[in-house]
Image 1 (spheres, rainbow, N blue to C red):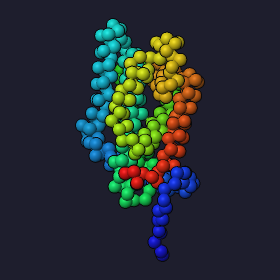
Image 2 (cartoon, helix red, strand yellow; image 1 turned 180 degrees about the vertical axis):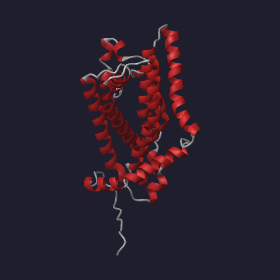
Image 3 (tube, rainbow, N blue to C red; image 1 turned 90 degrees about the vertical axis):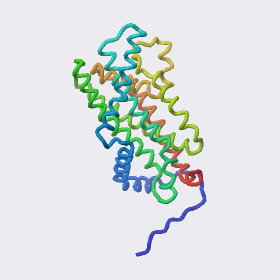
Image 4 (cartoon, rainbow, N blue to C red; image 1 turned 45 degrees about the vertical axis):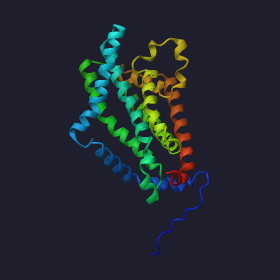
Length: 275
Protein backbone atom coordinates (compact mmCIF):
# COMPACT_ATOMS: atom_id res chain seq x y z
CA UNK A 1 0.00 0.00 0.00
CA UNK A 2 1.49 3.33 -1.06
CA UNK A 3 2.30 5.96 1.54
CA UNK A 4 0.09 9.10 1.41
CA UNK A 5 1.87 12.11 -0.01
CA UNK A 6 1.25 15.65 1.28
CA UNK A 7 1.60 18.34 -1.37
CA UNK A 8 2.37 21.86 -0.10
CA UNK A 9 1.32 24.52 -2.55
CA UNK A 10 2.18 28.26 -2.42
CA UNK A 11 0.11 30.17 0.12
CA UNK A 12 -3.15 31.60 -1.08
CA UNK A 13 -5.73 33.19 1.19
CA UNK A 14 -9.00 31.31 1.33
CA UNK A 15 -10.89 28.69 3.29
CA UNK A 16 -9.84 25.03 3.10
CA UNK A 17 -12.46 22.38 2.21
CA UNK A 18 -14.57 22.67 5.37
CA UNK A 19 -16.01 19.15 5.25
CA UNK A 20 -12.61 17.48 5.02
CA UNK A 21 -11.17 19.91 7.57
CA UNK A 22 -13.98 19.19 10.04
CA UNK A 23 -13.56 15.41 9.69
CA UNK A 24 -9.82 15.73 10.22
CA UNK A 25 -10.41 17.84 13.32
CA UNK A 26 -13.01 15.43 14.73
CA UNK A 27 -10.72 12.44 14.23
CA UNK A 28 -8.17 14.15 16.48
CA UNK A 29 -10.57 14.91 19.35
CA UNK A 30 -8.82 12.43 21.64
CA UNK A 31 -5.49 14.07 20.91
CA UNK A 32 -6.97 17.46 21.87
CA UNK A 33 -8.10 16.05 25.22
CA UNK A 34 -4.75 14.41 25.96
CA UNK A 35 -2.80 17.44 24.77
CA UNK A 36 -4.87 19.64 27.09
CA UNK A 37 -4.22 17.32 30.04
CA UNK A 38 -0.49 17.30 29.33
CA UNK A 39 -0.47 21.11 29.24
CA UNK A 40 -2.26 21.19 32.59
CA UNK A 41 0.29 18.80 34.10
CA UNK A 42 3.08 20.95 32.71
CA UNK A 43 1.56 23.93 34.53
CA UNK A 44 1.68 21.91 37.81
CA UNK A 45 -2.09 21.46 37.92
CA UNK A 46 -1.63 17.72 38.14
CA UNK A 47 -0.60 18.07 41.79
CA UNK A 48 -2.84 18.72 44.79
CA UNK A 49 -1.19 22.07 45.52
CA UNK A 50 -1.50 23.11 41.89
CA UNK A 51 -5.23 22.43 41.90
CA UNK A 52 -5.57 24.14 45.26
CA UNK A 53 -3.90 27.28 43.96
CA UNK A 54 -6.23 27.18 40.96
CA UNK A 55 -9.10 27.79 43.39
CA UNK A 56 -7.27 29.96 45.93
CA UNK A 57 -6.05 32.51 43.39
CA UNK A 58 -9.48 33.86 42.27
CA UNK A 59 -10.91 33.21 45.73
CA UNK A 60 -8.29 35.39 47.43
CA UNK A 61 -8.70 37.98 44.68
CA UNK A 62 -12.45 38.11 45.29
CA UNK A 63 -11.77 38.54 49.02
CA UNK A 64 -9.42 41.47 48.37
CA UNK A 65 -11.91 43.12 46.02
CA UNK A 66 -14.74 42.63 48.52
CA UNK A 67 -12.61 44.21 51.26
CA UNK A 68 -11.88 47.20 49.04
CA UNK A 69 -15.57 47.58 48.20
CA UNK A 70 -16.46 47.44 51.89
CA UNK A 71 -13.77 49.99 52.87
CA UNK A 72 -14.45 52.42 49.99
CA UNK A 73 -18.22 52.04 49.75
CA UNK A 74 -18.90 51.39 53.41
CA UNK A 75 -21.42 48.65 52.59
CA UNK A 76 -21.18 44.95 51.89
CA UNK A 77 -23.41 41.90 52.30
CA UNK A 78 -23.42 38.20 51.54
CA UNK A 79 -25.14 38.62 48.16
CA UNK A 80 -22.46 41.10 47.13
CA UNK A 81 -19.74 38.59 47.94
CA UNK A 82 -21.54 35.73 46.16
CA UNK A 83 -21.96 37.95 43.09
CA UNK A 84 -18.31 38.96 43.17
CA UNK A 85 -17.10 35.37 43.53
CA UNK A 86 -19.37 33.86 40.88
CA UNK A 87 -18.66 36.62 38.34
CA UNK A 88 -14.91 36.47 38.94
CA UNK A 89 -14.80 32.69 38.54
CA UNK A 90 -16.82 32.87 35.32
CA UNK A 91 -14.70 35.75 34.05
CA UNK A 92 -11.58 33.63 34.49
CA UNK A 93 -13.13 30.96 32.26
CA UNK A 94 -13.01 33.45 29.39
CA UNK A 95 -9.76 35.13 30.49
CA UNK A 96 -7.94 31.78 30.68
CA UNK A 97 -9.06 31.01 27.12
CA UNK A 98 -7.56 34.32 26.03
CA UNK A 99 -4.28 33.99 27.91
CA UNK A 100 -3.87 30.36 26.90
CA UNK A 101 -4.84 30.95 23.29
CA UNK A 102 -2.73 34.03 22.56
CA UNK A 103 0.53 32.05 22.27
CA UNK A 104 -0.95 28.69 21.31
CA UNK A 105 0.24 28.99 17.70
CA UNK A 106 3.62 30.63 18.30
CA UNK A 107 4.42 28.24 21.16
CA UNK A 108 3.55 25.26 18.94
CA UNK A 109 6.09 26.26 16.30
CA UNK A 110 7.93 22.93 16.19
CA UNK A 111 4.72 20.96 16.09
CA UNK A 112 3.39 23.09 13.24
CA UNK A 113 6.60 22.89 11.19
CA UNK A 114 6.96 19.12 11.55
CA UNK A 115 3.41 17.74 11.63
CA UNK A 116 0.38 18.06 9.37
CA UNK A 117 -2.77 18.68 11.41
CA UNK A 118 -5.57 21.28 11.68
CA UNK A 119 -3.85 24.22 13.40
CA UNK A 120 -7.09 25.30 15.05
CA UNK A 121 -6.60 22.36 17.42
CA UNK A 122 -4.12 24.49 19.41
CA UNK A 123 -6.46 27.35 20.43
CA UNK A 124 -9.22 24.76 20.97
CA UNK A 125 -6.92 23.01 23.44
CA UNK A 126 -6.42 26.32 25.24
CA UNK A 127 -10.18 26.62 25.69
CA UNK A 128 -10.44 23.02 26.89
CA UNK A 129 -7.76 23.80 29.50
CA UNK A 130 -9.79 26.85 30.58
CA UNK A 131 -12.83 24.60 31.12
CA UNK A 132 -10.73 22.13 33.14
CA UNK A 133 -9.56 25.03 35.32
CA UNK A 134 -13.10 26.34 35.76
CA UNK A 135 -14.69 23.13 37.06
CA UNK A 136 -12.95 23.11 40.50
CA UNK A 137 -13.82 26.78 41.05
CA UNK A 138 -17.48 26.00 40.27
CA UNK A 139 -17.54 23.34 42.98
CA UNK A 140 -16.02 25.77 45.50
CA UNK A 141 -18.55 28.43 44.53
CA UNK A 142 -21.50 26.12 45.26
CA UNK A 143 -20.00 25.40 48.67
CA UNK A 144 -19.73 29.15 49.35
CA UNK A 145 -23.29 29.95 48.28
CA UNK A 146 -24.62 27.02 50.34
CA UNK A 147 -22.81 28.24 53.47
CA UNK A 148 -24.05 31.80 52.93
CA UNK A 149 -27.60 30.55 52.38
CA UNK A 150 -28.24 31.80 48.84
CA UNK A 151 -31.50 30.47 47.35
CA UNK A 152 -31.75 27.51 44.98
CA UNK A 153 -34.36 27.00 42.28
CA UNK A 154 -34.94 25.25 38.95
CA UNK A 155 -34.15 28.54 37.24
CA UNK A 156 -30.50 27.81 37.97
CA UNK A 157 -30.56 25.33 35.07
CA UNK A 158 -30.15 28.43 32.90
CA UNK A 159 -26.51 28.22 33.98
CA UNK A 160 -25.99 25.41 31.44
CA UNK A 161 -26.73 27.41 28.23
CA UNK A 162 -24.98 30.47 29.70
CA UNK A 163 -21.92 28.32 30.43
CA UNK A 164 -21.99 27.03 26.82
CA UNK A 165 -22.14 30.63 25.59
CA UNK A 166 -19.16 31.47 27.79
CA UNK A 167 -17.16 28.56 26.38
CA UNK A 168 -18.10 29.54 22.81
CA UNK A 169 -17.13 33.17 23.41
CA UNK A 170 -13.85 32.16 25.05
CA UNK A 171 -13.10 29.79 22.17
CA UNK A 172 -13.83 32.49 19.59
CA UNK A 173 -11.55 34.92 21.43
CA UNK A 174 -8.79 32.30 21.71
CA UNK A 175 -8.95 31.49 17.99
CA UNK A 176 -8.97 35.16 17.03
CA UNK A 177 -6.14 36.32 19.28
CA UNK A 178 -3.94 33.30 18.46
CA UNK A 179 -4.08 34.26 14.79
CA UNK A 180 -3.49 37.96 15.48
CA UNK A 181 -0.46 37.10 17.62
CA UNK A 182 1.21 35.39 14.65
CA UNK A 183 1.31 38.73 12.83
CA UNK A 184 1.56 41.12 15.78
CA UNK A 185 3.58 39.54 18.61
CA UNK A 186 3.15 42.55 20.92
CA UNK A 187 -0.52 41.65 21.46
CA UNK A 188 0.62 39.08 24.05
CA UNK A 189 2.24 41.85 26.11
CA UNK A 190 -0.93 43.97 25.96
CA UNK A 191 -3.25 41.13 26.95
CA UNK A 192 -2.80 41.47 30.77
CA UNK A 193 -3.87 45.12 30.56
CA UNK A 194 -6.84 44.16 28.40
CA UNK A 195 -8.07 41.50 30.81
CA UNK A 196 -7.57 43.81 33.79
CA UNK A 197 -9.58 46.52 32.03
CA UNK A 198 -12.37 44.04 31.32
CA UNK A 199 -12.64 43.28 35.05
CA UNK A 200 -13.39 46.94 35.79
CA UNK A 201 -15.64 47.46 32.75
CA UNK A 202 -17.73 44.36 33.41
CA UNK A 203 -20.34 43.77 36.17
CA UNK A 204 -17.93 41.99 38.53
CA UNK A 205 -17.03 44.53 41.22
CA UNK A 206 -20.54 45.93 40.87
CA UNK A 207 -23.92 44.67 39.70
CA UNK A 208 -25.36 45.78 36.38
CA UNK A 209 -28.57 46.90 38.10
CA UNK A 210 -26.62 49.51 40.10
CA UNK A 211 -25.53 51.39 36.98
CA UNK A 212 -27.39 54.44 35.69
CA UNK A 213 -29.37 54.17 32.46
CA UNK A 214 -26.89 56.50 30.75
CA UNK A 215 -23.95 54.23 31.56
CA UNK A 216 -25.84 51.06 30.69
CA UNK A 217 -26.33 52.28 27.13
CA UNK A 218 -22.59 51.62 26.66
CA UNK A 219 -22.79 48.02 27.85
CA UNK A 220 -23.41 46.67 24.37
CA UNK A 221 -19.82 47.59 23.44
CA UNK A 222 -18.52 45.09 26.02
CA UNK A 223 -18.96 41.54 24.65
CA UNK A 224 -18.99 39.89 28.09
CA UNK A 225 -21.13 42.45 29.97
CA UNK A 226 -24.54 40.84 29.37
CA UNK A 227 -23.07 37.36 29.70
CA UNK A 228 -21.74 38.09 33.20
CA UNK A 229 -24.99 39.85 34.14
CA UNK A 230 -27.01 36.80 33.08
CA UNK A 231 -24.65 34.48 34.97
CA UNK A 232 -25.03 36.57 38.14
CA UNK A 233 -28.83 36.56 37.95
CA UNK A 234 -28.87 32.78 37.67
CA UNK A 235 -26.11 31.82 40.10
CA UNK A 236 -26.61 34.48 42.78
CA UNK A 237 -30.36 35.12 42.84
CA UNK A 238 -31.53 31.82 41.25
CA UNK A 239 -33.58 33.80 38.72
CA UNK A 240 -33.98 33.40 34.96
CA UNK A 241 -31.85 35.86 32.97
CA UNK A 242 -33.51 38.48 30.81
CA UNK A 243 -34.10 37.48 27.21
CA UNK A 244 -32.16 40.52 25.96
CA UNK A 245 -29.05 39.50 27.96
CA UNK A 246 -29.11 35.99 26.49
CA UNK A 247 -29.71 37.16 22.91
CA UNK A 248 -27.03 39.86 23.04
CA UNK A 249 -24.55 37.37 24.52
CA UNK A 250 -25.45 34.83 21.82
CA UNK A 251 -24.96 37.45 19.09
CA UNK A 252 -21.55 38.44 20.48
CA UNK A 253 -20.41 34.82 20.92
CA UNK A 254 -21.43 33.78 17.39
CA UNK A 255 -19.96 36.92 15.82
CA UNK A 256 -16.59 36.55 17.54
CA UNK A 257 -16.44 32.81 16.85
CA UNK A 258 -17.42 32.99 13.18
CA UNK A 259 -15.24 35.99 12.30
CA UNK A 260 -12.29 34.62 14.27
CA UNK A 261 -12.62 31.15 12.73
CA UNK A 262 -12.86 32.56 9.20
CA UNK A 263 -9.80 34.73 9.77
CA UNK A 264 -7.89 31.79 11.27
CA UNK A 265 -8.75 29.23 8.60
CA UNK A 266 -8.10 31.63 5.74
CA UNK A 267 -4.60 32.38 7.10
CA UNK A 268 -3.68 28.98 8.50
CA UNK A 269 -1.41 27.97 5.63
CA UNK A 270 0.60 31.14 6.14
CA UNK A 271 1.53 30.33 9.75
CA UNK A 272 4.55 28.14 8.91
CA UNK A 273 6.10 31.02 6.92
CA UNK A 274 5.39 33.60 9.65
CA UNK A 275 6.78 31.39 12.43
